[in-house]
Length: 402
Image (cartoon, rainbow, N blue to C red; front, side, top):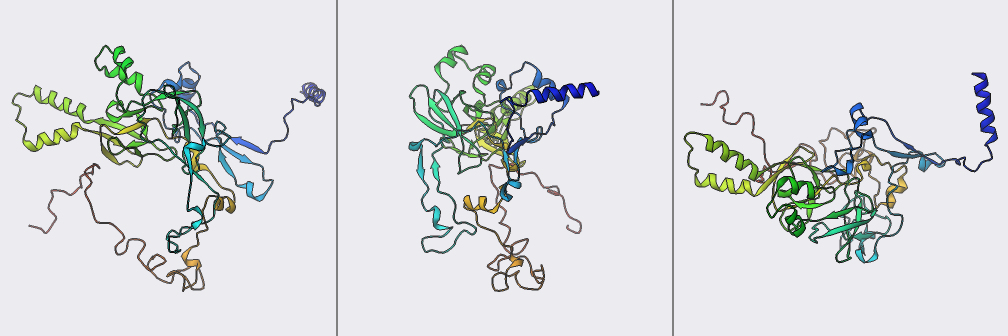
């Protein structure tokens, strides 16, 4: 052991003057190893992860890669940033942006009164015009992935290979420069029709279209696929699942459910004729697709609405730490003061000699109930697009009722 240590020490001393020795680093990348044995085996195999229909959610299986900094100053001691070295370092395309007017008003209206609290200051911004509809057909080349100060997810700059026009879209997780994406909102292209023999083949259609970053109608997306940027109305842009790391899952298609129900009804000995109400319900079911959001909510969305295959980019956004108060000020965020820390004239919870609100029910700064009080919960409204669970005691009589 002693000889090996001396030999290693001499080796290090002999190469001390080489320029290959890295200088002192000001930041370190922290990556935790949380992969299971099966995932390690799949990662070392020859399967290309980019060939999957949609990438699996990374928030629960792998730890985020966070960059930490040496505490040279107090502001960088608690600074945490996700590693996004693939982002474009330059400015955005000028013609695809416009200035954000009224940014320095500090949450005030045209009368100068504060209507939105905790707003003020901040750096000047330019709004990126993102294409949420993606109606342009044909292949589009991904030029680069950019940072957008107006949203938590990243955006991708596309160039149409047919018209050479530039556009911004929401980038899915894992997208890099050089990839080719396509939108099928205007219909199936001619070359794809010829490859399927002039008839729709569900297997070939899913294998050719359900790729990460492609925009498709909901009825063309296979069941179980992860999607984001989901629209709520036909011929309109995406609205749901646009934040960083969000996604939805295609649970079922109405037409497939009806086909299965008709097959079972055909096998029955004495099928019953359908009523007018049942026929209307079947037409409505056939025109909708069932998706499940991350909150567990199940929604019925029209089959012609748009959706993008994959997960919204920048899933490690939730682990970001500003590190200092000034960084919040750069983002147009002013401090938030607790009500119990104010004076009695400024807030209903203020005053007193300690951290107490003086036996007062939780109220807003203007005296309105804030938690489980009067007029805090909206009236129950039935949304036909949301599949509500059936109450437990529905159809049962309570004790004491006749």
